[in-house]
Length: 155
Image (cartoon, rainbow, N blue to C red; front, side):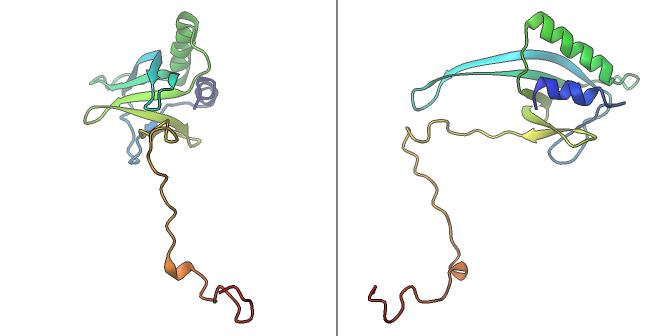
C-alpha cells in the first residue's frame, strides 16, 4: 500500500485497527512512534546496484490505555512527515515488535489495516546460478490415453 492509499482510507474511518498476519489485532492503545523514509542502497548477488525507498511506520504498544490514535491524528503525522522529510508517495513498510522487530507490508480489508508477511528473495536469479524450480505434475493428472495412435507412425 502506498502513502496516498492509507491517507485515503483513514479519511473514511472512525477508528484505526491493525491486524497481524495470524488474525490477531494489535492492541488498540498502540502508538505510531515513527513515520519516516528508509533508503536502501545495495548490490544484489548478480552485481546489480539497486536503490529501494519505503515509508516506514513503527507501531508500539505502550501501557497507556487511556489514549487511542485517531485517524485524523495519523493523517496529521503523515502529512508533517511528507512535508519535513520530503517523502514521496512510496510503499509502506510497518515495523512491529514480535519476538524481534518484524517488518510487514500493509493492506486494507475495508475495516482493518492488515500487516502482511514479507519474505526474502533473490533478485538476480538469472545471474547467480540457482536453477528454476521444475513444475511438479501428478501422474494421476496425466491423461491416460496413448500418446500416439496405432496408425500414426510416431512411435
